Length: 105
Image 1 (cartoon, one colour):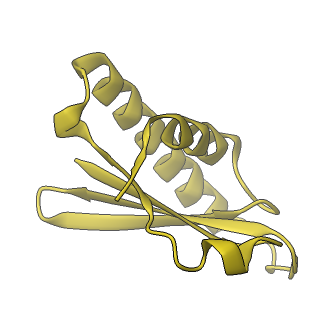
Image 2: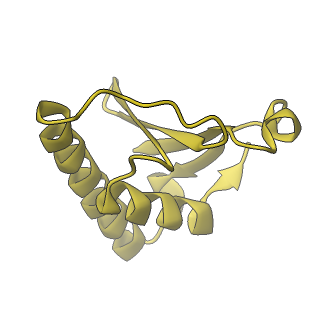
């Protein structure tokens, strides 16, 4: 599994505009770290699905950061997108883990 984190917006957007996304490849992780990442991804996906059903209209937050997490596995990919304004606790946990373990490509 390959997980990519891209960060958008916020006050430092011009600085980050040219940076590559952060990447975690489970082939390079110990088994315990891979299991933790899978658990965090599953929890964030489940929370996003539940939130999509009862989400209120999106309100603008001009200086808010937004995050795109792309999960690629077995020829399939899915993307989770959330912002500082409406981030679920599960997505926040995944984001923290990725920031600690990802490498910039």
